[in-house]
Length: 397
Image 1 (cartoon, rainbow, N blue to C red):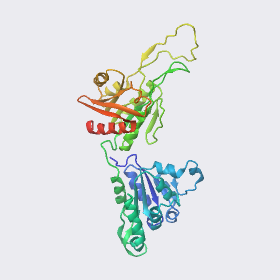
Image 2 (cartoon, one colour; image 1 turned 60 degrees about the horizontal axis):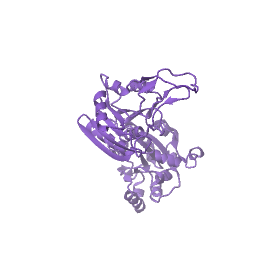
Image 3 (cartoon, rainbow, N blue to C red; image 1 turned 30 degrees about the vertical axis):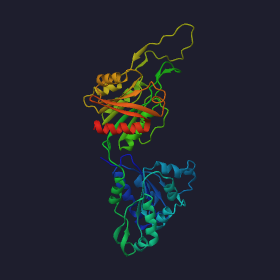
Image 4 (cartoon, rainbow, N blue to C red; image 1 turned 90 degrees about the vertical axis):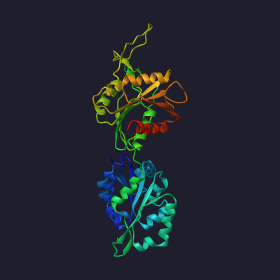
């Protein structure tokens, strides 16, 4: 189990001789599952090259606040939004002072101001500089703001002095960063989620579908990622942005969705069938547009394959959770689906209301197993999804 699975961490390398340890810090974070991007300050670049850090991180190294290409999309803001944590290691006295003063004088200090994630600072400098009242006041200011300080070690320094100021060991730094991210029972688990509506073609112009937007499924995918899972999303017609931390597979029709689920589900720990899959498809799809006629038009429908049932019939199957979109006899119909499909849980979704459910940003569901029923009251789909993941951990793992 890798505790930093799917976590995005920025490592900022500033001007200290200890910058040579940065590649090892990157490697330690990667070993724990993290995706690491590096910010290299002008001072840090005096001790280590961008090429070294790019080779280890497998990502572009960011160094210039005034990079025209990056700033076309407000690069420093996007970088700040990308991160789940910001680690400054080594942090020089100058960098610590800039951050404490709230400056935005370079890329690193600008990202610090724009971030909405935990920040870790690992000081590294001469023992006299570290012990100075100015540095200690700056560190105290940062600590009061919630910055997590990774104390330097005591020992012989590059200049020959002996005292506090040596950068903490890479393994210790990675261990402290890991502690801020709580392990859950889905950390490291592989989860496959279907989302959105399927489309069944009538002719090259028309199709049969439904009102599913994919918002609930994507909220679930995001919550699973936040909980540390490796997520695969098989998506139909959606009106929501995909998360690039998922393995995203496009499947417009029910047949394609069935194929991609069956192709991938055996490698999963959990399968959540959230997509609104069409029960029927057109028997004879027309290759040319059907022209309007004065007489009535009849279209013959045939059943689609049942993805949820087919997964449940597998000899070795993952924990399987379905969704039941109902408009009447809600609990009764959902329990019947739970029994008929043979899955581990059903999430009852009332789609008869206009203020939550299909297309809405809100939802209200009931999580049903054979021996329990848990209602999740109306809330944003993000919060409902987070609660669903918690219930999966409590009841099924």
